Amino acid sequence: MNRNHLSRRSLLRGAGGALLALPFLESLGCVPGSEPQAAASLGQGLGGFPKRLIVFFTPDGPAPVPGLWAPTMSGSTMNLPAGGVLEPLAAHKQSLTVITGLKYLSGLGPQAYGGPHNWGEVCFLTGTQCGPNNFATGPSVDQVIAGAIGSGTRFKSLEFGVQIEASGVAKNKMIYAGAAQPLPAAIDPVQMYARIFGGFTPPTGGSTGPSPADLDRKSVLDFVQSDFGALRTRVSQADQQKLDAHLQSVRDLEQHIAASTSTSAGSGCVKPAAPTGAFVGNDLYPAAGKAQMDMLAMAIACDLTRVASIQWSNSISPIRHTWVSAAAGSKAHHDWTHSGQTAQQMDVEVQINRWYASQLGYLIAKLKAIPEGAGSVFDNTVILWGSEVGRGAGHSMTELPMVLAGSAGGAFTTGRVVSATDTPNNNLLVSLCRMFGLAKTTFGNPAYCTGPLAGLGV
Image (cartoon, rainbow, N blue to C red; front, side, top):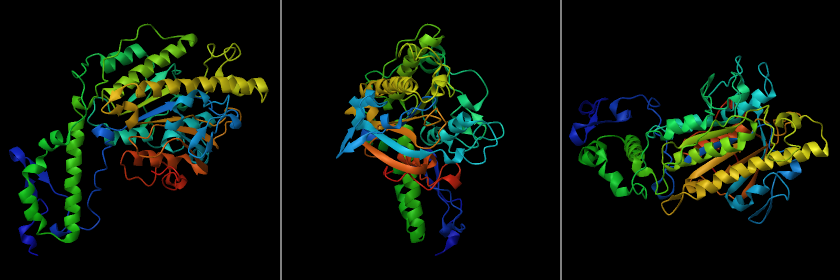
């Protein structure tokens, strides 16, 4: 092969004189292993609509009584414990994947900084430990995924909060752009509405999603096929495979850009009513949460973002749940977790967490009610529900209860229980990345990660 006819700057010329750079090829004199990694799949879901990730955080441990948390399976049927925390989600149980046995192992290393609530809050999404400033030492999984699928939307990600205490400590920070770079959640629904929907006009009539014809019509690759064919005959077989993979990644990128326009919004995209009021005060906690969830759901449906989170209060929650029961409202949620292992204490904790489960149920139902193509927005969504501890009493960071709602466009099978005894939560974070096409084998601290979560199938 005469390499004088090829250069490392070889380019294909497309429409309008645009240039398409080639990958590093051995036939062009490049050193093996120097080529960049191929672009990850960009998270296309069912019907051509994008996949979405939502993080749903509730504080102080959702499983105060283990026997009232984990479902059992009868064949393919999930059985939720009567009176248990997850019972309010019964209507959606076939859309759930309940994960048991996870541990915040990377939060259990040399604990020089912060306390257990800080450790768990940081480890939940980052799989790292608190650094000297009590913040995470790496990015959270939602931001890594948002970096791959969110660049074409108006908001790379949206962080909603519900009456989170204002402070600089890690106990109220779960989202991280990078090491020691927390992204605080916005707690004012009125301000969030102005930010998200203030200048937004929904597309008329919505859309059924980008068609293959629409996407192909935008492709610069259509204009370089003859040049590509000629070049392909002049490189080695290994380089042909690299070239094919590179051009496919370019087409994937073009489809992502096309899908990021307003035509990606389904017919259910409407501008929601603006929330009014201050949403300040303990007893307005449910109203503030509902307003935030309503906006989150429509921001997802209108393809203004594909990654969002909602954080209810913060670890060491001061919220008194007066609307749940007189007892639950008599003192702060966190105080109840340390009121001794009495029957009343455990009953109140179950009541509080059943209420949080009902809020997740509201969000699921909201997404299921928004049409998108032949299905709903929920069909292409996965929601991760977790907390900073398993049980508030004792600050347990083992036997962590976590729930996935939805399948991210059929990325895995729902309606089942996945046992993950003694497994680091880092493995779940790897699997979340893989749901969105990121070829990850580790996440967070690699010393506490053994690959994707076994049994999940992603």
